[in-house]
Length: 408
Image 1 (cartoon, rainbow, N blue to C red):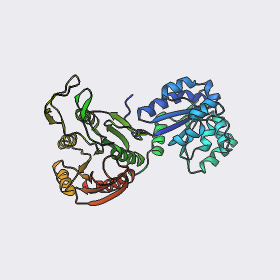
Image 2: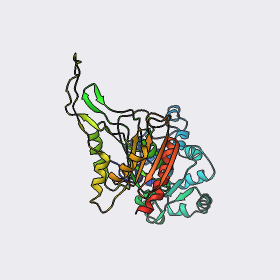
Image 3: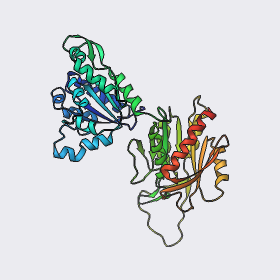
Image 4: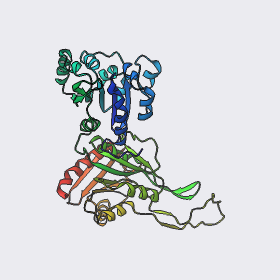
């Protein structure tokens, strides 16, 4: 499944109540995953009378939490883990019984237990018979829950119900539920924006065991991606060979060579709002790759090189003929005359922003956990940023988002 929507990487927990509308959760999961969301499901015992845990597991791709007293479930993906994992908790269908127990603060099944420990936004999608919805006790429970700001509602709708009655009580239409989830899950200055980031090194093979590369770890590029994601963007990362990076919530395309990175980027650029070229792309590759390990000779060896594709230049050239152009942000890893070369790159590649740093500096550049950069903009803006790479990324994005209005 190729995710493509604004919910890219968002973590959605769904608590399924025991009502006939439970079967619609299957299509809800499909829609959320199509929009790029990660989905995990908890269900009450009565919900299993309408839809099986195996079905929901197959659709979500994750184990389903069904029993808060099961040792193996609680150890691997239990109530506290689900509560800490989720960005948004959706209760669908929110039955009269579930609403009553949630209002009372009960935590006695696989839905109410993690919900009681959850601290983020909760979306209720009620579904029940009209008489149950209009019962004074349900009305009282709904009124009390609506008084709490972190509880949000979608539906119910009016119409013909499963039992033939006509009136309010139908589960809201699934697109309306997805839209409500989107409003809760995607917030911040980059909400609704699409960001494409390149990160890490590339490797250009000499033979099956040797290659040309550089010391890039991908940490700065992934920090840019994670901050964009935290600010509401849907983020895709084209990532060179790296290890140990925090990639949760990101759509990652793994590549090795500069050609592969170029191809992956060009397949992903349509509709983006920001392109961040943070990868340390190898500038050269061997003209000929040996299919077998080359043995050492007695004398000097000659390795003939050719240029690799310039990924950032290719993206810039592509958008010169387009009516809609994303903001282009480049990184310049230098060893001397940092701002001189950064300004040249800004102009030559028609960038909006260039981020330059001296990779020979202590505690900055390749492999370090911290960084120190100079950020230049097409409008003449300049800032210096330092700190952890995540902190530096936040400062860069702050400058980018403030610049966007000035250059559009």
